[in-house]
Image 1 (tube, rainbow, N blue to C red):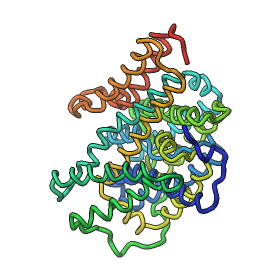
Image 2: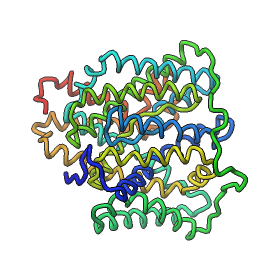
Image 3: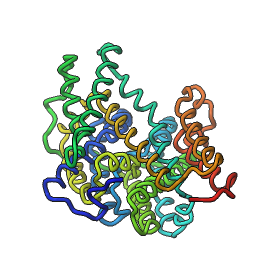
Image 4: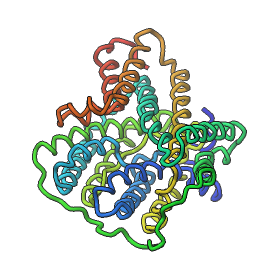
Length: 423
């Protein structure tokens, strides 16, 4: 893989800012999408989003400079979203308290050093499957985003999506260097403008919002949760830990980062502390995302320092209600196309990883990789009626295609096919 800027390289100031905008363009969609969903259950979506931007901005700085020190973006944990949505019959205070408990457990797991035993489970095949699972299990989300046409005809909306996809990959094929890194940002900007102009859609930004204002109601409500809801979130945090570790492992392995165990220990510690503060603030907890390999593969930039401008931008946005309101007006099809582009790049990175490390030597190797991916895809597309009948205590795990796929590949690699030669 052609890496222009390595992990500890510091690009020139202009490039640093441009790369920072690139990371910002990747980070914002997940914050807006998940924050928008959960903001409906709080006192207004804008304050909720402000708190998410604030926490993620601070944690991103801490992770890059002290934690895992890897080029990884941070965002709300989708597995906790499932836990929250399935616990709405309880009080929001009980949910927040459960997130705090989960964050404490995760922090202690990392500080005790037990996390290093978990880290050893991630062989080359496991890391490859994790990269592919992320791309394939995000397919339903991408479909929902690109098909969310609102008042636009589904046919015209689909034509726009296909056109934007083609435009992105054409631009990606003819650009080099720093311009290639700006493809997601350019798609976000020009795609949104084109969408609004083509379909004559008016935005809903209210002019009475303040340009600068701190988040209101910074502290969330807390109450004593019952044993059942704590159990749900402890299981959710097990899945979060798998996600967090695999994100650091896959990215670190891809760019040949040193001292992976130390990075994982510090990274999970920061994630745990971040979830404690998330519960205190009354928002969904964060996790390290594995979107980075796709972006690194597409742009050739693996410098962790280029995330600092992105973190600073998140903190600035956190104190601007009107800016967050504007960001929520990005058309869903545009967000879906950008995720599509990044996931295609990530699949390419996984294929390259398997080739460089000669992952496939026997049919068993193919089964170890193929079964978890197919299982993850099937679960991701299961009708909601099927998941609704699951027992509450196992629902966050069994209904999550990524988590079940990750568990499956670990089981196949280390138990069922344990005699197969590891890479």
